[in-house]
Image (tube, rainbow, N blue to C red; front, side, top):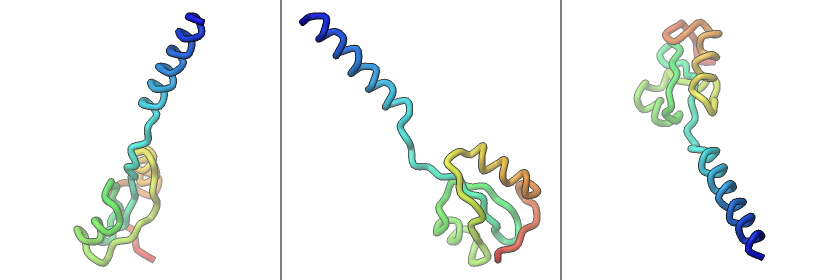
Length: 85
């Protein structure tokens, strides 16, 4: 019985540690076309539109900043020319 309690305790600790290290923060990283230039930002669309004006469109959204940066680089890089459709 004592061994079972120890095993259950170890299991609970492992599950707790795993859950805390893989928790999802909810932050999204987006590639925007704002004022005809490519930008990568963690602000949502409403915040970007408020900051950059009506000539802002969302190109693509990612869970990781490195993915957003890579996508922007393939599209010409941050600051490269773009057009909202």
